[in-house]
Image (cartoon, rainbow, N blue to C red; front, side, top):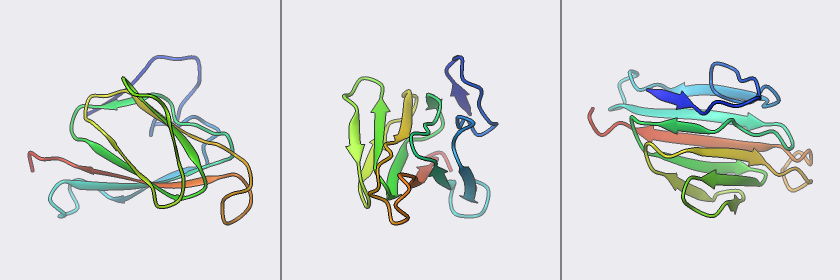
Length: 122
């Protein structure tokens, strides 16, 4: 089960700010992979997800392309680049922002992420 923090920005059903490019469920928890979920997220330059919190599982945020700023409740914000990973504990508020610039492969300042979750109860 997921929850979103209240806020003034409208979001899509996935909890992404409307200026985010795309969120695609690659593998769902009921797809036969032992409760593992994998979501690919493409963020436009300077787009960010709304603050999120999940009580079902920890998350790994994996940056594929571009640079991001990740805010996790109770920790200093961190900047992640390609092939860097951050652990987000279950039931912890967090959000991700594409930093812009021209460091991504397309030179647009966008960011590509994978978010991996595994439900230990499955």
